[in-house]
Image (tube, rainbow, N blue to C red; front, top):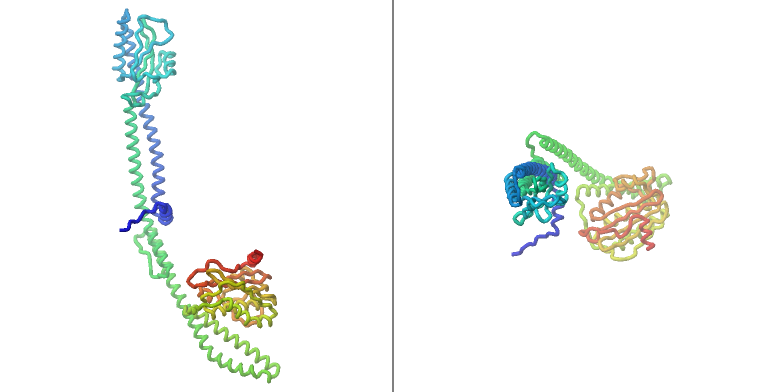
Length: 530
């Protein structure tokens, strides 16, 4: 049995992907985060408030008890009639007992105020063990000595049963007749108040945690009520975009979500009707073009045969008849090419074009096309050159279609080249073969570049055609390129000419990584300098 190990390193990316994709998760997490922040702030405020109230209440209680204990002890001393040290010590023990009973605390310390004259009747100092070791500060003692009619207190840590607990020491002054002034300190253990505070804090935090979980559950339920219809809408829109025009969103209720679903379904139905109408119209248009092209074939063939006979006998005609015969022959040839192009476009529109690839030496194919077009270029005063630096040029292509693309590109370059040089380049890399055709003629503007591959579009409608183009050459070239999974790009600038670059994959199933030839002429020059 194969055990799969959990990938901890990929966990953050999976969480991030889930966070981006799940609206419900984001809603619940944000709701819990904000609620948790509110609960923490309220909990901290309540904890401090309760702590202060508990301390203040306990402090008032110990101050009251300490005052009662001081009064009880002072009464004992005032009513005593001690004449020797033994009797005075007995009175001190009685006062100590009264202090413990009145204060409910066994932590008592009594110290004679220093800097008094020695008195043989003065009882000895005593202190509980818990109040020794610097628990009573010098500052508190000084306040008690300097103010006989007031009580003073300080927060301390007391060691009770070997455990450090919070507490308070309350100091006041006693006047023992015949013995002098004494400092009275009573310690109070606040451990019970601290336990109460801790219990309350635990209750607060556990209640806050439970409330946070409850808020998360509520947010989950509420967000699910809202997100589920949105998920249905998203899934339906994806199916609709994929071409399933019959899919609809289920409508439940009469709320805003139901209104949205109804509107979406109405939109989908309207879109379906329009797309169906457009599809029918497109089929009719394709059938019309195909039928018309086929129907025109027969009369065109007859006209062409008759025109060819007249064209062959043109030398026997007078000048006007001979010129008319030549014009008739040229226009019949152009009409024939137009019908061929229309039939080819209709095949692409109908999706009935089949690619016939075969291993082809692209450099040799380009050289053959350039050789074929050289005579035409010379007739128009253009210098047609080929640059093929070498490399791996074999590729799986349809030679007939690529030849047609090149003849269209070179023919356009001759048409618009203004009798300037035309440069054809071919190169390849590991994934692609590229062919570029550059002229130095009129060029094109940015607006013209956007329409250069449109059907029957001309950059300058007033410009006279010298090669008899049909206006479909670049549109067919683009379709021929796409069926190869290739790219046909163009660069042009007014007065600087144009560059058409054809990039074809060496293997039709392997995508093109990068074109071997640059499109921008500035990049081309930089590459040549290097």
